[in-house]
Image (cartoon, rainbow, N blue to C red; front, side, top):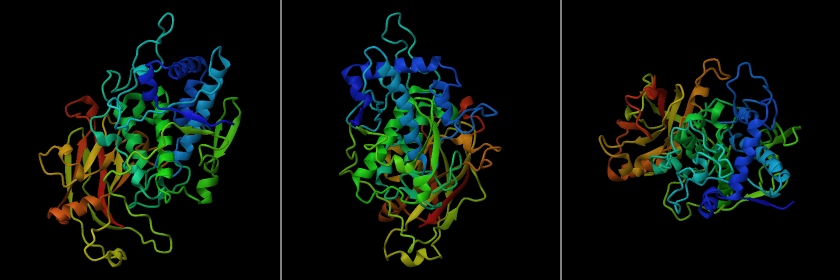
Length: 473
């Protein structure tokens, strides 16, 4: 079978705002939206696979299945996207004049060569389709918080940063560690107890939060057509990560390789697929590649976190500082918290070369709250009253908050443990030490909202960060 090519939606849009590939996508969505929710090829059914708010869940084996905050995040979404693409492609191929090789496209919002990269492509904001009678455009969803006005959905460039590509390990096993793909878990829908993967947070969660509205929650995200184009890009970044460094490897653990996920295919038949079947997008059953899988950060300055030690030499990360028992509440304006970082007393003290910066990971634990209209940039020792954009060297990472509502539910599968984030801050600490600005007794963590909410109803009861901690790896 020939290898299909998933193309860059903005490159298609520059050729023609309503490129044929995009118009066929819109036509197929109109068809899917006509189908009843019980039809596994319908628009509602496909979105509910990610999550549904219906209670009781009418299809518990197939709905509310999305894998987040887990090493299954990437393979599960790859399968989900592939089968959705099949539904669209099969319908298009059955139509007069429909291409037989249609493929989903991707939205590369991190493309530094495209000034419009963080804007929604034109076809996703036009109110009507370019067809006789000017029917409503299904690609435009009115409940988006940002993007429908033609402006950028982001407020800061680090919302679409690709620092995730520097992560040397696919997965991690505990707080105090970071990874590209997420923590080692079993089937996991809404518990981020070991900290989510770097990619899951940024750019994945950051873009969900940036668009907001339906895209900002698990149970409505799949109803926005940009969701699928966004996830096509996240899937592309998995290929990019593997290609950019020979040391970047997928897990070989049978627990990751062999867990089966249940879906329906375009013929409405039940299919079971595992990670082992989708690790290479260019082979059967997938047979696709991306228009651009080159390394977008080659030659750029940046800090690469240290590789996770082999099991024989691995030591347990040691907590060396925390804000406990004082939680931090965020309501859409900048907030700071202070903590002291002590020297390690465990095995970590023996492995640090003289003069080397301490290998530290900043953790945000038990982050809880309702759906929130902004994410936050997290900074270490940001000078008071300074502009965050003037201090990129102090940026630890994004707290994107996609999935916050789901992970906070008291009656959920994991009893509302909330979201957890981990950021390697070793490079920040090294720079502060070199400038003489590192005082371990007075470490300040600042949360800067992507979008100011102070005084607005959407700030609501706010977001509570249960504990800020620092671990020595």
